Length: 89
Image (cartoon, rainbow, N blue to C red):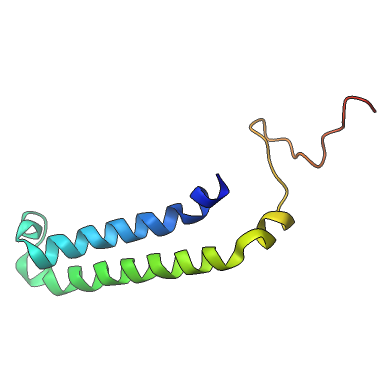
């Protein structure tokens, strides 16, 4: 489940960037939303979003298990698992 959270923002950036590039480069659909003179800005922003998605995926992949071990886990109720006492004590 941690891998899904780690790559969620990267996938979202890639999908949005790809959609912006597809709309602005391969169709005239962007004309419904912006003026024709703004097409270069759409292309640049779509490319930047995809670049940020790739960077986020690479950085998230490199962190691996060291990040997970230093972070304390929080339960649904908001209590930290390290602070919870065992029932036998």
